[in-house]
Length: 101
Image (cartoon, rainbow, N blue to C red; front, side, top):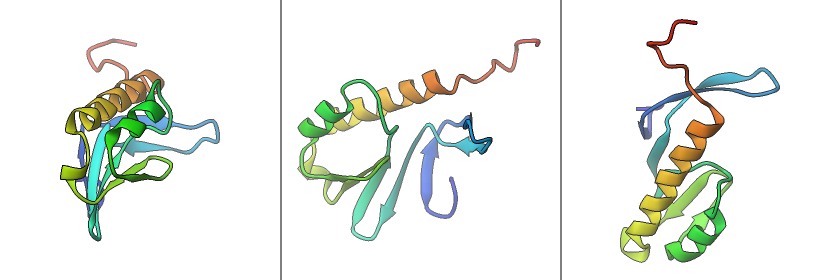
């Protein structure tokens, strides 16, 4: 769990140029009211094209809001999440805990 209402898988540590840093889930979801929210990276290759193929949804900066899973293409949703995780790992490479530095 990431906070009181977000389920997440995997984790990564981020640090912004501003100095702000923290930990987050590589992939996350939550139920907000009557919608499922899937959290994805804000920018990665073909993100907009995939969202156009997803089906009935709305988006925020990193949120995809879905009222009914039956209204979306689950393979497209899976691709969005997989590519989002890959992009997040690319942006925030984590040191291998077995490496000696």
